Length: 65
Image (cartoon, rainbow, N blue to C red; front, top):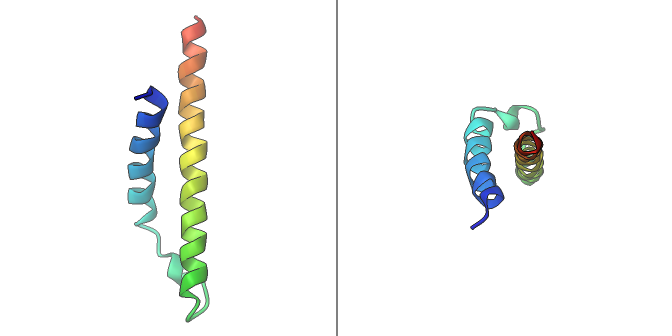
């Protein structure tokens, strides 16, 4: 298994854990549960992708030196 896949797994756990502290339902209108869930899903996927690639790029750039 590649290191990047392991990094994705760890970052996924951390992002979901950190997003759990937000009260996203307070942002949305009442009875808009599905819109809030879809927003939460896309926010989580975006953060996982961005953080993992950021850490991976730092890791790869340190290998050059």
